[in-house]
Image 1 (cartoon, helix red, strand yellow):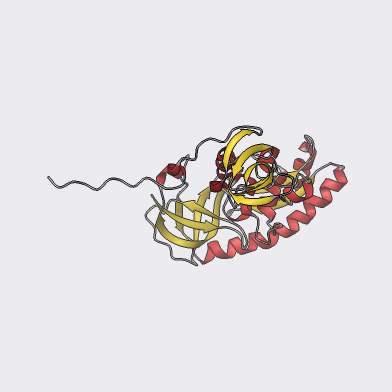
Image 2 (spheres, rainbow, N blue to C red):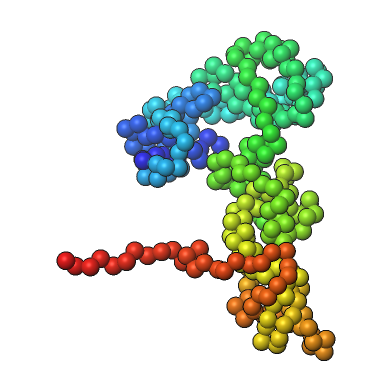
Length: 292
């Protein structure tokens, strides 16, 4: 299907929209329909085709190419929302609410002002909404978001030195568990496997299937294997490098690292490795067609 990529913030992620018959160029602004209402955003990639199977629901359409009035209104909204953010923080403190304000945004026609916040528990903000509506004379909406959504909206750099995955390309958060860190042989120190949001890093899920497969075909520590030096006990298994550190049964020989292909599993360990399946690594190629 054909889509255009549009972003609404300087450092924000791009979203797909249905061109709806328009052909905006990169760098131009368009008015699009979103779940929050009509918004004006910058086209970061002109119309291009993407696989239709990757979308769970129908894309929102581009309503029109933005004119000078739309662009001026968008820039004015972005300037005014900073003052609205400060005012909302002030009123939150005045009402004594246990909530942390994260972001605020106007819709293009200023018919709605949305505030995003995080909180440990449910917050009764009805009086706050009335207070803000009297001050801004528009519809006020407060949305409670999670800490992962907060990182996604604010952005930043991860411990890898790259911008947050959630701010760049992740459309949905994937379930991540401590089991993944164990399967990948990572330190279980929360400071090393948690992101800036305080939750387990999303990137733990990227290679999980590969680790699960490699662990299933590799002898585990404690296994007895046969090496060119004779039988020995596996001390360490590096599934990525495809090596085993083996301590020989003969005490006079020191531990040695062997390629997995040079070791034959005999017994022991947490589980017996299964036989590697080449098709898990090499994609099947269709057989050549015979003429006639």
